[in-house]
Image (tube, rainbow, N blue to C red):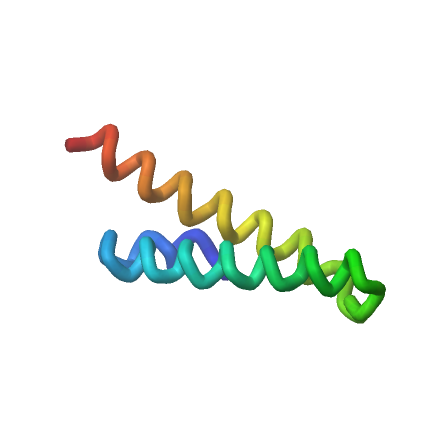
Amino acid sequence: MKAADIRAKTEDELRDELRGLKKEAFNLRFQQASGQLENTARVRDVRRDIARVQTVLNERRLAQ
């Protein structure tokens, strides 16, 4: 996910996106623990996407 794509979304959309990414990260951790995770790079990508969304939300909160 690109930062420009994230900045184009509204706060509600970002919160929904963050909720979905956190659920995905949770499921990936379970898959990794049980040995079923095939794409290990996805864990890193999801973590970085979560950080990007949180950064944009925090920037907007501070700008108010």
